[in-house]
Each structure stands twice: as C-alpha cells, then as structure tokens.
Image (cartoon, rainbow, N blue to C red; front, side, top):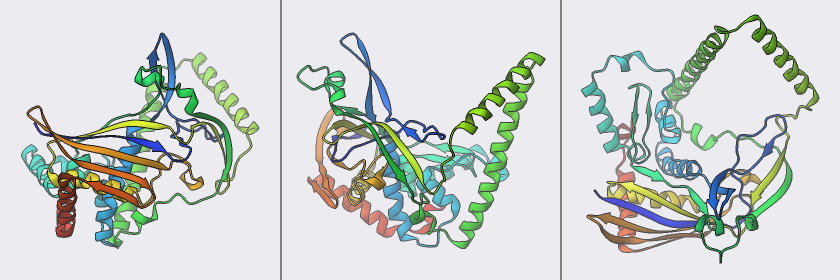
Length: 355
C-alpha cells in the first residue's frame, strides 16, 4: 500500500483562536482544548483542529474548480465541492438504483472529481457516502506537556487572556455562491426548503419521544424550566446582528508552534499535487481559525513530503509558506506532482465534476 505523508508544523504569526461553540447570549469564545496527561497532571491544551485544516484545504481546491466554471455550477456540485454534500432531502430516484449502479457511479465520480477522491463526501441523490483518501491529524502544540520534554516551556506560556472587539461584517461566502447558474440558484432554494422540512420533522420526532414518557410532574417541571429560561433571556441585553461584541476568553499568542501531519492513502501524483496547490492558494491568505477579520490566525507553514511503499521511504520534496504570497516548493517529486494537478485542472470539463 502506497502512502504519502506531509509532516510539518504551523507557527503562529499572530494570535490564534479556534473556538468552542459560542454562547449566543454573551458571544464568549474560548479556544478549543485537548486533554493531555503528563507528569501526573491533566492539562487542557490548545490545539489546531483537523476540521479547520481539512476544510481550508477543501475550499482552496474547490476555488480552482469554481473559478474554471463561473456562473455554470449546479447547487449539488457546489455543495459537494465546498461542504462535502449532504444526506438531507434524499431523492426518491436514488432509492430505486441498484447497488451495482450506485457503486459504478461512485467509482466514476472518484476517478473524475479530484475533490471527491481526496476528501470524500455525501451524495444525497445516491443516498451514499464516498470515503476520501485524506486523513488529517491534530495540530499538537509543541510544549512540555505534549512533547514530554522538560526543556520545552509549558503550554501556559503560549496562552493569552481576555480580549474584546466589535464585529460588523458580512459572512456570506460570495466567492462560491456567485458561481451558481440560474438553475443552480433554483436548486439551492429547493434544497433549502427540503432541508428545513427535514430538520423540522426530526425535531417533531424528537419531541414526540420526549413527550411520550411525560408525567404530570415532569410537565410541570419542564414548564418551570421554560419560564426560568425566558426570565434569564430577558436579563441578557440583545445585541444587534450588524454589531456584535465578542469576548475572547483565551487565545494562543504569536510565536507558538503546532506539530502536524497529513496522510494520503493510495493517492495519484496529481492528488498529492492538489494538496500542494491548496497550500499554494493558502499562502494568498494564510489565516486559520476565528477572527481573521481582525488579524487573528496568521500562520507560517512548512511540510516535508514523503512517499512510503513496502516500508521504504522516498522524499518527494518540501513546501513552505513564509508569509502572505510567499510560497516555496522544492524537490522534483513535489514539483512534478503540482504540474500533474495543474494539467488535470487544465483538462477538466464540467461533465467530469457533475454530481
């Protein structure tokens, strides 16, 4: 089995915060933590989320394809490229397909659509999930607690406290939705109606299950709880959506380093090149996490790329992002991989990415 490993690190060039779910009443945000046990203690240490990295890579490859087909994309194609699709609003015609037909279609999609092959996704018209080839690791903070080395500083050295700012911006991802065709816009509207109906049905089913075991006492208790929640909501001042005050409870300071690894299983060379290209695009706007609009999350990135086959390692090359639009690549294997991806993109037709 052939594997390609990207081994490297992210270094913060600005404060970084990757949030837990926000309290919608207070807009308080805390950076995500992972529990690490060391020297008899348990510490909640900031980490770089695999979902943050993975979604950024997917978006950057998707942008190459979206830009190739302006105002042509259907909504299913756009949703799959940027978000991995969805199994909500399943189509009846998908249920009628034979298993062989479904798997032949999945094979065809994976061969033609490089985003499907690398990242996988959900095909709601086939009612199936496509597995991807990419495994994205956790970005571990390099510190005493994670590396088990007393010569490194404690993670607390890299944590800042208490910031506040007023946010006023539009978060609609226009660069993607502006690529929709007129038919794609109609599909988007229809899909959103299906999604809302499906979500409403799930809520009603959940409510029925809960209500099915109610007694008079539990009903009274729930009513009391609802009354208390409403009273609490009255006490909290409402914040206009156009001007939100954000409270950052903690964040990672500039100068912290996260160790990271990506693994591709049985990739083609052009798929390795797609990941390299994603980082080339990332160099145009090298920010991750929350609050990018106020300069948070600026990153320096470097990876060594190695192929492993039959327990033998071959170095393909090296990539590095020094700063904005400062992307470097070295090594014949890495350069060839990027060239093969660009050839794929050059020869890509709309039918090849059609879902």
